Image 1 (cartoon, rainbow, N blue to C red):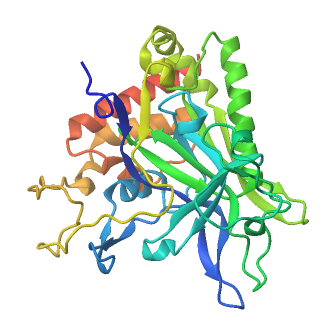
Image 2: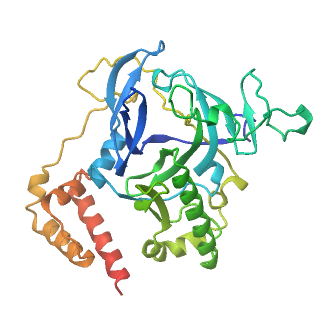
Image 3: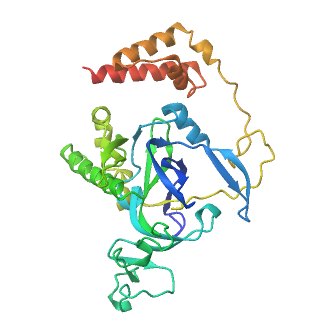
Amino acid sequence: MPIKGITEVRRITRLGKIKTGIKEKNAKGYEYPKEMEHFVLNPVEEIRDKSNAIVGTRENPHIRALIDLYGEKPHEFKIVFPVDDDELICGHYLKWWSGSASKGKSILKCKGDGEFAFYQGKERVSGLDLPPTEYPPGKNRICNPLVCPQAMQQPDGKPPLCKPNMNLIFLIPEYTMFGAFQLDTTSAQAISKIVSCLAIARNALRLEGLNSVAGVPMRMFRKRTPNKHNNVNYIIHIEVDIQELKLQKQYLMERKKSTLGLGHKSYKIELDIPEEPDYDLLPKSEFPDQIQTGDPIMIAAPTPDYEEWCEDGEIITAFKKLSELKNTPCPKAKMLATMKRFTQKEDLTNYLAQMIEKEEIKQK
């Protein structure tokens, strides 16, 4: 029997953030996001104490693992969504943040959908107020970007305070299924494309007999796309991984009746993540030579001799066969990146055997 308000809530742990660009400063000294043609993986995080002072940095081991797996400038990830609920996996609103996110003091001042919003403030704006009885539940302000002063260019040249904002939540099964990654975007073009991609995926999956996107293997990648300013953006696209779906379809069909497959209809899942950059309130580590994760200090297992593995005939033969089946080169660096995911040679050989079997099934 669950405790009301406590144990009936299902939480998904956030392992880290994947970004689409970097921050730069313009001629006036204002920071702005500069889009990159690849995903950005930054394993270094700041650590702040309770007074919000920076007391050190740490390396996020999950982001570091993604770099080892996909490289420093990945253009594509294989992902799955944990539930079939757009509010949880790709929640998108117009948001106005007040304060300084970099100093950890930013609060969500207003959150709207373009028609109505929930506004946390006392200032009244002509044209954005109605009698209280005329608002939908949970709303207290009209949301109109054409007349809202926060959604317009600021007089001092700063960008609008209120912008479209999407928090995309997904799993990367090639790394782990025990935690989610988050990707944020304020690009209206990207938000529209992601929502459209998911709608198309749902329609196509229904034809396959599947009524949920939860657990379905997908590809998330950047696609070069012209914009209305005669420039180019690298928009995020999401599509079903057809080959992988063929291999997993029987499993997904068997899982159709499970509560997890139905997502929020049977579960109330709450993502334990803030919508702005967060900082763990950890004290400075007593072990400066170790990564500060907040976890108990563990004695590390001996590191395997991967160079020795590179000379193992069985392993080299398996890599060559997999390379031929995929018709892609497999240099030593790529082999080492794969090896570093394993601490036992037996686990590596079993993994290579499974991958070879999958590729042979695809090509039949």
